[in-house]
Every structure is written in structure tokens, then in C-alpha cells.
Amino acid sequence: MTEPECLFCRIVAGEIPAIIVRETSNTLAFRDIAPKAPTHVLVIPKEHYADVATLAMDDPALAGEVLATVADVAAAEGILGDGFRVIFNTGALVGQTVFHAHAHLLGGVAMDGELTG
Ligand code: 5GP
Ligand code: ZN
Image (cartoon, rainbow, N blue to C red; front, top):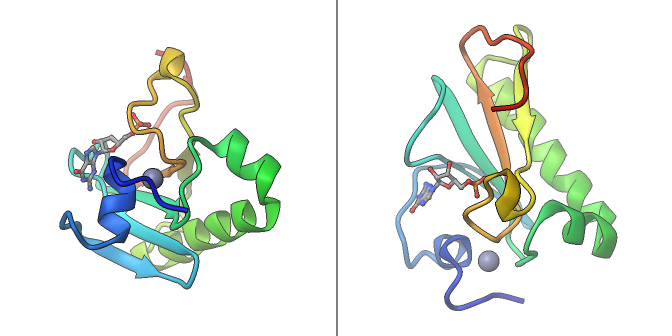
């Protein structure tokens, strides 16, 4: 299912350009337009789910595919060994702005363990 007004569904459809770094049959990975780290890639299921909770409950296998793509991109970016951070903002309260489930893959720089902000 796709949502015609959804920004990330439109990237999947090729209607909005993005720098795509990996594509599988069910997932897409592309660079964040406003990177917060040297590597900042968004990994999404091609199918529309509003957030990772909905995705995980409705299709846990697809949620696993998203994480597998995160790992593949981390390897391709050369940050698998040094380490990286994966964030799923879930809900407006914690800063989700695009309501199509997406993992932020962040790496390439040292980070402290502070997770709130
Ligand atoms: P959220 O705040 O929902 O967790 O993350 C949404 C992310 O999407 C933000 O980091 C933002 O920079 C990114 N973003 C917003 N619009 C676009 C766009 O048109 N293209 C790309 N590649 N990233 C976008
Ligand atoms: Zn969507």
C-alpha cells in the first residue's frame, strides 16, 4: 500500500529524487537530506507503515528486512567495525516528522551515550 501524499512513498515511486545507496525488493536506503553525521542514511520499507511499531506488529519479517538493510548499508559505508547508531523516531512527541517508518543509520563520528535531547 502506498500513500500518495507521503514523502517517502513518493521517493519509492521515483517522484521525488533521492540519493539511493541500496535497494532490495522490499526496502530502500537513501541519504538524509539534512545529514546529522558523516553517514546519515534512512532505511525504509517500500510499503507504507506510519511508524516502526505499526510495521513490527503488522509485518515483523519486513521489520527484520529493514534491519538487514541497515546492516548491509553500514558495511558498505565502512562503519560496521567502528560502530553506528540506529534510531526510529516514533511519534511526534519524540520528533518524528515523516510518518512513513524509517531507520536513521548514523555513523562515521564518535558519539556519546546521551540518547535524550
Ligand atoms: P524524522 O524526524 O521523521 O525521524 O526523520 C525524517 C528525516 O527525513 C529527517 O532527518 C529529514 O532530514 C529527512 N528528510 C525530510 N525530507 C526529506 C527529503 O525530501 N529527502 C530526504 N532524503 N530526506 C528528507
Ligand atoms: Zn509512505
